[in-house]
Image (cartoon, rainbow, N blue to C red; front, side, top):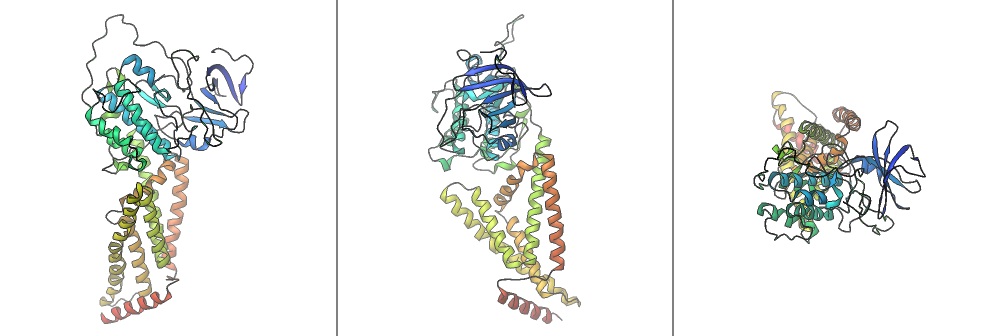
Length: 487
């Protein structure tokens, strides 16, 4: 039903305004202490929503989660109120999407999925009813309450199915459906591959979809004077899926048994722009967004993305990653054996996190092995150059020269040709922090202090080659003989 709630005036600090009943739960439209409209999603007993992670999802294409109380009876989650129609209803009324509008929908949905995945969550029940359309832009609202047995790869398959539906207007359409753009068909097929490890990730979907050419927008005839609105006002759903009739304007997926986490679908997350990323054949995190974020197609405004905010976030993430690499170099100067070993393992593990399948992981290890000779050139060359200044009558510590070589060799591991995957994985780990000014400032301050302390320590402390003390003696003796030969 809709209207005033008859028996309850508040849920927590929120004043109830109206209620929409669905087959598997209730959503209330409410107001917070400032009068802002919010939507409160009531969850089944035993549900434990990860509210902090849900609030950490940052995207203009995912509804903001503002609050929640897993301990309440029943538990609930609060999101911003989003007026809009489900994609299923939008396509039913307006017809399938074409040209740039379809491309925009594909990219925006990929951005939504990527933002959810970056927070360490999965959507779990993504479908055309869990995507609201507001001024032509999608907003994902079903979020994080149902576990997909395929994990995050299940969201990639669901993305393929939603885009196929948007292009054809049928939830039963196949990839061989007539009228489906050939340029899109291959990407949808890859996203729905039976081999989960072969599916692209959401970051790769963004760049791949951004590069698609789906043709021009269809011609739209000029509306006649006094023409009626193209569709009636959408029912208020508080940012959750709605159907046209039968459920009070609200429809929700059924409850699934997820091993103690049985919950219905709707609840969205996030709220700010998120980075774009690559394609299966090109690394996504540096892909460039083009004009698709500021367009109006067929009367549908495609929305806009604050590219300057994206550049700032990436800049902060790169800066934090650089500070970590410098700290790793300082550790290698103070403790060469330990520092080089830890950095080599870290580079390998970061490469593995971006690899797909067993072959990808084997390749990740192989890349680190191949980069060792490159790092060795610096580890050997730098000490020789340092002690080489003996030719002009300046004698320097041979032990310190060897340690400096270990430090430069360590940094070379992070910057060697082919090491971009490890660096990007490190940057990606910092991107969630970079969207929050207070958090990134604190992280920058901590890493900045550690970097300064590391530089001071590297210049002040006597290097230790523990546990390979024999290597220390041999290296020091060799460099001393080389230095003496230059006199």
